Amino acid sequence: MQEIEVQRNEARVPETRSSQRERTSIRHATMTADLLKAHVALLEKEIIFAKQGDLFRLVQHHYHTLQSWHDQHTGWRIQRHSGLVRLERHLSATTPGYLYDRLKEPKDFACLTWLLWYSENRQLTGRGNEQQFLLSQVAEQIQEQSALGLDGEEPFDFRRSGDRYSMQRALHSLEELGGLQLVDGQTREWVEQANTADVLYEFTSAARSLVAALHPHAIECMMTRLQDPTMTLQPNVLHDLPEKSPLKRAWRALLLGPAIFRFDDPNAFDELRVHAEHIANELLDTFGWLLDIRRDYACVVRASGMATGPITALTPYGTNDQIALLLCQAIRDRVETHSWSPPDAYGCLRITIEDMTDLFYTVREQHGEHWGNEARNKSSRSLLQEVYKKMRQVGLLRGPDETGQILILPTAARYAATYEKPAQEASTSSHRRGKTTTRRTTMKVSATSLPGLE
Image (cartoon, rainbow, N blue to C red; front, side):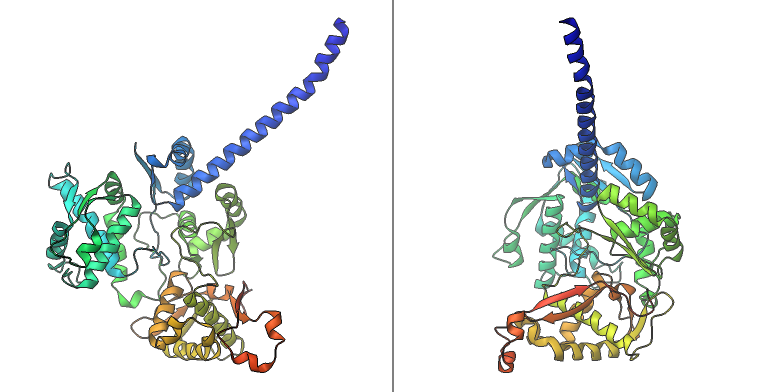
């Protein structure tokens, strides 16, 4: 019997070790997945609050690993407090592409900046313990300060409805960031100037964390550049900032998006190419994303359905998005038929406003029937300005500058677009083709290269 029991125990050993290896493998996979989730959340969310429970605890748990990774690759610092965690992301270039649902116009961003100034000013003047304030008070302060003309911009006048709406969007944006909370009243009533309506707000600790992340020297460098109209179409890297490592600049450009261009920072792009395999593996292991690197640019590719963070992206659904895609196709056609000059050494095209306007008229004539009523009823000038804005945000062009020049970036070569009719409609008689109200269209998009960019 003893011999039989020994044999049974020996038979169990391999099974036990196998189970241990399996459990270890599962535990490792879970830890890897959790760390990846923490990395992505930290990058995509402006602030993670303690009230977010599991996500906050997850990032706190992996804090040292997360900070070590950013020390090595981006040089960014993670703010960690009892109530919130946030990644201080700093630019190495004047990168376009950020779009928030609430903030759409320059004055919206200006109002947000003034709100943060007001919060910090209360701290400096000894009123920081009392975080509540009336909207009428902050509006009066902002109006007075902006009237000093220190920034050279038109001062705010909250008797104008446009300025009040900008303030409303800024307040709601700061609320969504968690830096502000509504105590009493309705902002809408203040905007509509209903009687003597006022609103009571309260700053949170998150407002302080947003201010603490600002670097005055970096802001001055960016202001100097952005206020110089001759720099609109020049490389956007900021050489005066402390971060001198080309590889860290490459990581920052990749993670902040929309792309890193050889035109902007040749040294960083060369480092990216040298370490392309390592960076691609690191990007996949850390965030679950892919690296798409071409001759003149590189960008991050995320799986379909994943969030894109604050970076806006083209889709085949919005009318302005469709027009941008169609313009990319039309640009390709002009280059292939030698109607326009070929790309320069960096894969960029330099054209004029007249070139783009002519191209837009052609696209509108060919495809305008597919666009929504709002777009069809707009003037070409107004609609083209909206499309310019969209194409700048997604990193397809820059400009126009004060001389009427436009820079088409090599990322425009990623897209080829056309409208397609369903097969059933394609086989119907020709008289049906004129009935645009019943025609269904789809957008076909592919990533390809302009001639000479392979």
